[in-house]
Structure formats: C-alpha cells, structure tokens
Image 1: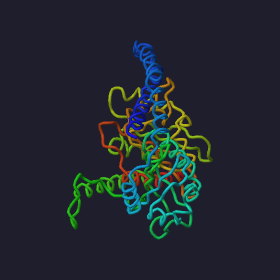
Image 2: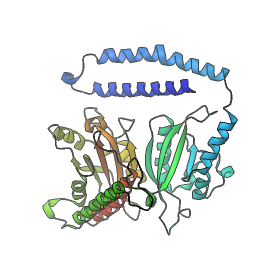
Image 3: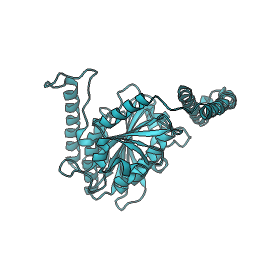
Image 4: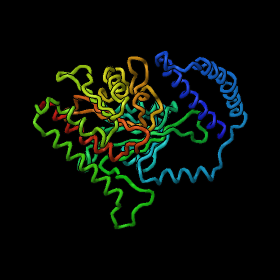
Length: 387
C-alpha cells in the first residue's frame, strides 16, 4: 500500500513537470531555457526506465499478496466514519456511492443499503449535477482536492433554514481492498460555515478574537460592496460589475477577472482584469484581458452550471485556460488559490462570472469567505440586470 502511494506521488509530480515543460514551450525564444529539450528527454527516459517497471511490479505484487487488512482496524474505521457529525460519502470516479455515514443518510434522505451503487447526483439540483460529476472525476484522476458549491434537489432542502445550498469538499483516498482511487466527499450547509479559527480554539463561552475579526472584515466588505452597487449607475462610466471588481481588488483578492454575458444571453466577454500593482502587472493583465473566457474550463463550467468553485493550489495549470502565447493563466497570475463565482439571478440565469485569485504569499480562500462571496454575487447580478 505504501509503495502504491509513493508511486502515485511520483506519477503526480511527473505530470506536473510535463505541464511545466509544455508551458515553457510557449515562452518567447529569448526567455526559453536552452536546456528545455534535454529536460523533456530526461522525463521521457524517467517514464520508460522507472515509472513503467514500477507499475508492472506493483501490479504483480498486488496479485500475489492480496490479503485483507486487520479486521479490528477496519471495524474501528467504520465506527469513526459512521459517527462523524458531518455528512460524508465515499464515491467512485463516476459519483456512485460506495458508502455514506449516518449524517449523510439524513441529509439526502437515503438508506445506506439503497444508496450504495447509485449515483448521488440524483439528489442534487439539475444545474449542479454536471459540475459535481466533473470535479469528482478530476479528483479521482488524482488531480488534487477541491471544494465547490452545489444545491440539493427541491424537496430535500430544509427551506426554513437554508434553500439547499451546500459546500462540498472532495479529496482522493485509497480504501483497503479498493483497486482504484475513491473520492471522499464532505458536505456542509453554507449557513453553518465557520469563520476563521486560530490554532487553538477560544475557551467555551468566550468569543474567538480571530473569528470575530474575520467576521468584521467580511461585514465591512459586504457593506462597501452594497454601497458601490447602490452608487449612481453613471458615475465615472463604470458598470456595476466593474465597481464590484474594484471593491474586491486588493483587499479580498490579488487578481479580479470579471466576465459579463450579453443581456439576451450568449457567450461571455471579458470586461475587467485587475492585477497587483507591480511593474509586470500591466503586461500580465493585458494578456489575461485578451483571453476569450470560453477558453477557461472553470469559468465555462461556472457560467453553464451556475455553481461556484473553490480550489486551493490547483493541480491543473490550464484550469483557467491560457494566454494567446500558450502560457497558462495560473502561471501568469502566480495564483495559489482561486474562487470562481457565477453571477446568478433568482431565475437561475447567469449574467456573468467573477474569478478571484490570491497569490502564494497570501492566505488561501476559506469556506466562510466563499460563502460571503456567494451572497455578494447575487447582489452584483441584480445590479447588472438593472443597469
């Protein structure tokens, strides 16, 4: 098992290096290292001489030494899994349920025996199903953990508490006895998302200073966003989407990319790109501004499915597409975390997409921030509709 995990890590690192070589190929001749060809040949030799023989050896060992794990340890793990207070499911790469705990059976209204072998997407609203399947499949391919927003099918949600909006965190696992990578899915109601926490929790009955501070920062951001959207529509000729981007830039995100759909529908068009204030920021912003939003898979999914996505240290360098020169947008922006939020009207129509990026030297986006951004996105969508 340890050998298989080590092999998976090596294979993931190999894929990253190949992606970096692919991005280097698109650089101008003067900026392209002279050793790129040597590096590519080295990686090919590594795959032929190291990765492939190790794969054959692992397959042979698995066939020879297929023995079950300690029954007591399995019993303990099952008990822990069932008693977790959050809804947790074990899925395969096609979103089919392998196991679910008691909290998940209550959330989805399913018995464990009935749910096993069926896709969990049937319990989600139709706009959320495609994006959920795509993210689960990506995690099962060992492309990294990720979080996204989904909505429960009507009738399952507790309308008195929250209209079915959930945050789900997906991560790859390899349970004993499974030949393929499984996906562990943990669900949370967005209304119950915790605020920022320090390493040690505050004593019971006392407010957590870090949590209170984070809440105040988000409330200030909400207040400034509301003021900007209620400002005179024609002030400085800026649209509501551009004004919203200015509020978010700097204080909430290092990069803000705003895409708008035409009033009658149709493809997205890029209306604003706000970059960090450095010497190279202008050139990088121009390259991102010239990009067609349709070439960014994550933005395209957000516009089509109407679901938000949160990624920490994204594994796929091309998740936001590439510039005209073929350089991944993630590499241009040096983003370490991203938040892609559709601007959705109450009718369900998407009038635009906001993509927020934070660079590596800054704390990654948290679930509480993503929840607050979802609330602001509804306000921005309404302002765009009336502009």
